[in-house]
Amino acid sequence: MKLDIINSKLVGLAAAAVAMSVSAHAFAALSDSDVEPYLKKQGCFKCHAIDKTKKGPSYKKIAADLKGKPDAEAKIIKNITTGPKVKLEDGTEDEHKIIETKDQGDLKAIAKWVLSH
Image (cartoon, one colour):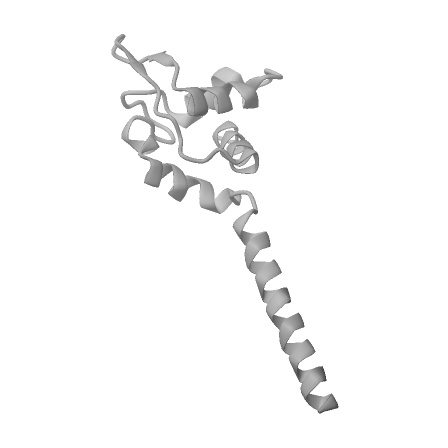
């Protein structure tokens, strides 16, 4: 009987440990290697490319334009979360797509990824 109690406590602890590791992973910010596939899934690469101009500027150009600006990260996050009107490379204007995530860790990871190019 005592052994059954110990076994049930061990099973409970193991289940709790698994649940905590899964939930911790679910709330972890995007890793650097996860950002590009996430942006592709969000449709960002329809208008942007890493190093060439499409409808929108390349990520390389965005990074160069924002280099050294203290609010660079905030500007990127604002663009991808509020959908402001942006001027496209052909001179027309369009509303920027709003990204699905609202997680601040993910948004910071995306901004850092863009600025790293």
